[in-house]
Amino acid sequence: MPDTHLEELRTALEANGITLPSLGIDLPSFTALPVRPLIALGNCNLATAEALAAALRRAAER
Image 1 (cartoon, one colour):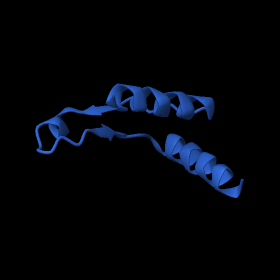
Image 2: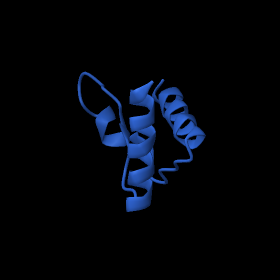
Image 3: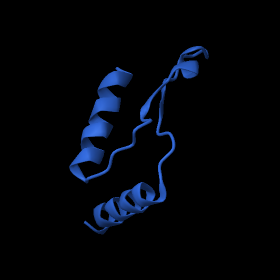
Image 4: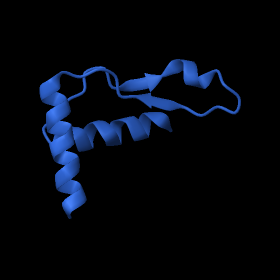
């Protein structure tokens, strides 16, 4: 199930011209009980952060 959400997020980001190279499943989150998988957004450079913020602002204006 987390794989599906991860791919949906990756696809949505790519549709807005944004790539987060370290986007992935946070494996340690599978060790907690109850299991609550997390998606790790990871690190990004300033240009990517700016593009992500701009995409979110555009979406919020709709």
